[in-house]
Image (cartoon, rainbow, N blue to C red):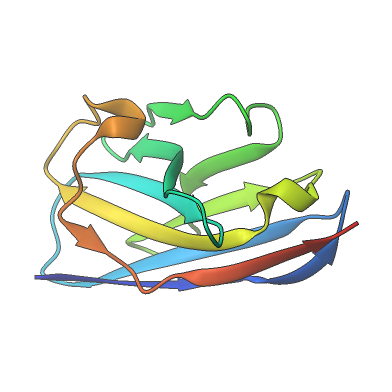
Length: 125
């Protein structure tokens, strides 16, 4: 089993930045496909970005390209999502997801087996 815990959410004004972090614990693997998803009230969950730890491959939703960066975190078994130039439409609960030993072949449609509990991001205009 893999446990995922997100942190770093909060409130920010439009144009500001936040950095989310996802820490994986429990059984560990050599590589992961990691993903960040978000869900706003009344909307479906959408993929934001995915990251393959083996090669550093990344893929982003068009809505966040050039503003968000997914990367390996500073601590072991962590992945971060740096969010810059935040917009009110970025407000949502952000979830981290993991698929051990899997290349992110599905991109934002990749099927993930493990999910975190989510962290709230609020962006005021």
